Structure formats: C-alpha cells, structure tokens
Image 1 (tube, rainbow, N blue to C red):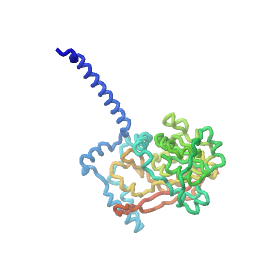
Image 2 (spheres, rainbow, N blue to C red):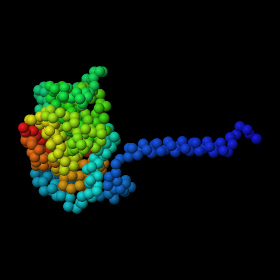
Image 3 (cartoon, rainbow, N blue to C red):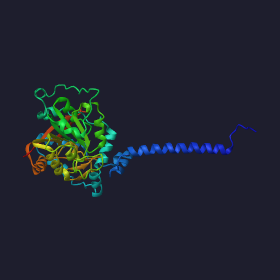
Length: 371
C-alpha cells in the first residue's frame, strides 16, 4: 500500500477546487466581454445574416449612387439625386428603435470611443483656413504653415471649474460643442496662443481621452461631459454638467459645432442653439460645419437605416442627420441669431488606391448672436 498516494476524497476535493477556480476565471472573462459588448441595434440580426451569406443582405449599389452624384455635379441637375433620397421603396425604422437610438445616444457614442479611442478622427487643421477669425494675423497670412505642438511644463495642469472666470479673462474664449477627443480644440490652441478653450461632449469616454492627452495640461482648456440638449435638471448622469453650470453667461466669443448637429435628434436642434446663445456674449458667433443633404454618405445608406426625412442611423447605432442651408438658417434665426454666412461646400475626394471620385457635400455657416 502506497501511504504517499492521496485518498480518493482528497483527489475529488482537489478537482473541485480546480473546477471552481476555472469557473470563476471564466465568469470574470465573460463579464469583461459583456462590458465591451456593443449596445444592440435593430440591424444586429441583419449583420449576422450578412456574415453568413453577404448576398442575402440588401444593399444600395454604391457605384450607381456614385455615378448619379457625379452626373448631377457635372450637369447641375439634382433630380436624379432627389429620387435616390426619396427612398420610395424603403420604410422608416420602427418607432420603438427610433426612440432607443435617440434617447440612448450616450451608450452608442461611449462604445464608439471605447473601440476607436483617439485614432479614428484626424486633427482638423483646416479650421485655420475655414475660420480665419479664430487665428492671429501671422496664421491668417499663411494658414497652411506648420504649427508645433504645445509645450507643457512639468508643473502645468488644467484649471478647476471654479477658476474659469479668472483664467478666461483676457483670452479669446471658444466653446466647442461635441469636442470628441480634441481633434478640433487642440489644433486651435496650437495655432493661437491667446485662445482659451471650453469643450464638452455627450460621451464621458471621449472627454476622458481628451483629458489624458499631454497637451490638455497646457492650462488653456477645460473639458467636461455635457448633454447640450438638456438643462441642469436633466443631465443623464452625475458626471454630466449643463452648459449653464460650467460656462459663465455671456462669456464666449465663438462657439464651434463641427459635425455635431448631425449626431443629434433634429427635434433638439433649436434647444441646442438656445443653449449656445445663452453662453455667447452679444455679438458672439456660432461656427457650424456639418454634413449637407445629398452627401455621398447619405445616398449610400442601405435600406433599413432610414429614420425619416434626412435622418439615418449607422450600423453602430449613432445618428446621422444631413443638413440643409434653409434648415440651419431657420433654427438659428428663430433663437435670436443673425446669419452671416450659410452655404454648401461641395468637394470631391479621390481614393488614391482605386482612383474612384467621391463627391462630398458639407454645410458651413456663421451665425452671430444679436443683442
């Protein structure tokens, strides 16, 4: 008899401990996957079918859409584009899912930034040229010249919210609505040392990525999560703050909305304009750049993404609304703004690999707060 051999009871206990440990590890791993699992969309079942059999998923012919857009641009006849946008054979997404996308926008954007981090959008260096009123004279003279990154001293850091009135004094104050991870704010701060930037975004994940950047410690910016469609009593979480809680009244020289209104339910566009007006000083200007109606991104949406009008939902659950100059003008004029400029910017992007020409349409506008 081998006295050193474990008894059956001891062997069973050891096996149970190993099994229990592995189940615990698996549970922690599953919970980690759950945290990264994207919010559901009505397109989930369609995406599953597409992976199994791409031929079963109906999709608009992108080449046909491109050809239509190019022909329209060359001829000046928009009738064929309007026929594509009419979506006569498409039904809007059901109301239940529309409510979910509009009310749950934060969850979809949080997941977007968790997945893409800081590498999805490029820095918006073109702002130096498109909005020269934000730039010093030397940059206006040569807006495409190289601008160095901000130099940060070891003891520098961002101000507290309570310090904002003092640190903003004497600066050109910019409020960036929908700042994301700072691709608009940081190029402006680099190009104009007199700018103080206030920045907010619906996604706390995006705001944290911005705060983690070394340049955020320059002492000339302050970022915070904010739902700009709601006032102080309706913010979605305790870490969100309304504009009126953070930004002093009548203190902002310029507000920028760069591809922001397109991500917001159009029912709230006027309330956003009203919130901004309350922060701008008299004579302050709102600068807008966004997707225009008839843009390639709109025309190429497949059936099942249309929410009605010019509003769509992407595959990840984020909204995409395509603006018209008439619509933007009506929104801001109704909230006490004077229209300085509002026009379509049409351009053509060429894919260097394939040579495919892709027509794009932006709307660019400037609205001044009246007394």
